[in-house]
Image 1 (cartoon, helix red, strand yellow):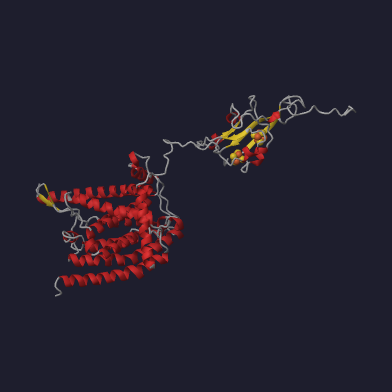
Image 2 (cartoon, rainbow over the protein chains, first blue to last red):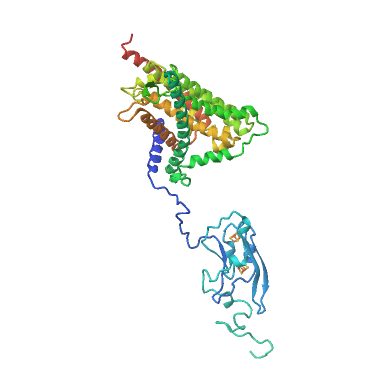
Length: 176
Length: 333
Ligand code: SF4
Ligand code: SF4
C-alpha cells in the first residue's frame, strides 16, 4: 500500500542517520593531519632547470598565451650565445586557477606544477611570485629532458654534431 | 529573617538560577545540535574553540555582540527593534510554569521547584506559543524585504495551522489528568506516562512541536535555499542572536512540554527529579536534531495538506475516542 510504503520509507531514513552517528567522520582535521596529495596534484608552480643546471625556460610566451586567466607575464631576452631566457618572469597566484594548461603548453618542460597546495595569504600582493621565487635548483619531473639537445640554434653543440644528425650541406659545393 | 522575606529571596534566586540555566542550556543546545548533525553527516562539527568546541557558543555570542546592528532604511524601526525580543521573551516566560520536581525543603521553608504553579499552566504555555508567532511575523513584516515578508507569511500560516493539532493533541492529556496545572498533570502519570496511554496524541504532539519550533521538515519560514534566511533575513548582530536563542529556547520549551505532558515530567526511579527532567528534555532535543538530520523540507502545499487533511482529523478522532474510553473506564456515568 502506498501509505505504508511512505511511512516505511520515512522511518528507514531515521535508522540510516542513527547508524551514521556511530561511524568515524570522514573529515581530515587539517592542520593536525595533512594528507599527502597525489604526485601529479596541480598546485604551486615552479620553473625548473635542465640537467646541466641552466634555466630551462626560453621565454617563448606559450604558457602565458595558454593561461586562461592571463596570470603569467614575462620579458624575453637573449644571451650572447643565442640562448633565450626570461629577463623577468612573474606568476600572479592570486589569480591562477591551477588548471595546469601552462605546464602542458611548455615545450621545454620548464614550467611545472608541484603538489604544495598550502599557499593561502592574507595579502594578495604576497602571492605575486617573481622568477627568483619560482626557480628551483633541480629538473623536477622528467629529469633527463633537455630541450637544447634536440632543438635550438648552436647552443648545445655546433650544428650537425648532435647524435643522429648530419653536418649541414655546403650549398656552395657542387659535389653531392 | 522573616519567612516572607526569606521566601521572596528564595524566589528571586530561583528565577536568577533558572534564567541562567535556561540560557546556558539554549547556547549549548546549539553546540549539541551542530555536533550531532555533523556526526550524522560524517563530519566533525565545531572542534576549534575549547576542547571539542565547547567554547563555541561563547565565541558565537561574542561575535554576535560585536557585529554591526543594521536596520534597513525602509524598515518600520520600532517594530523591527522589538520583534526579536518578543520571540525570545515568549520562550523564556514559558519556563515560569514548567515544574522541575517535587517541592523541596530549603532553610526550613517549603520551596516549589516551579516559579508559579498556575492552575491553567497548560493554557499559559499554549498562549505563549501563539504569542511567539507575533515575534516572527512582525519581524518579517517590519523588515520590508521580500524574503523576510515571504518567510513571515509562511510562518504565520504554518504556526497558526499547526497550533490546532498541537492543542488538540494535548486535550486528551487534560481529560485523563483532569487538570490544567502542570504539576498535577505530572503527578497523574505516576503509574503510566501519557505517551503510553495515548500514543497517537504523542505522535501528533511531536509533529506539531516540530512545526511550532519551525524546524525541519517544517522550516519553510527560514528555508535557506529559497528565502536566504526567511523572516530574519535582514537581522544582524545581537537582534539576530535573539531570534536564534529564541528558536533554541523554543525547542527547550517544546521538549519540556513533551516531557511534562507525555513522559511524566520529573518522575523516575533513582535519580533526583530535576535530573530526570533534564534527561527527558535532552532526549527530546536529540529527537528534534535527529529529525533535522534525516528529513528534507516539505513543500508548502504538502505542509498544509498534511495538517488539514491528516493531522487535524486524526487529532479530533483521537480526542473523541480518548474521551469515550475515559468515560467508559470510569463506569460510564
Ligand atoms: S595553472 Fe592555469 S591559471 Fe595557473 S598559471 Fe598555469 S595556465 Fe595560468
Ligand atoms: S615556461 Fe615554458 S612555455 Fe613558458 S615561456 Fe618558458 S619555455 Fe615558454
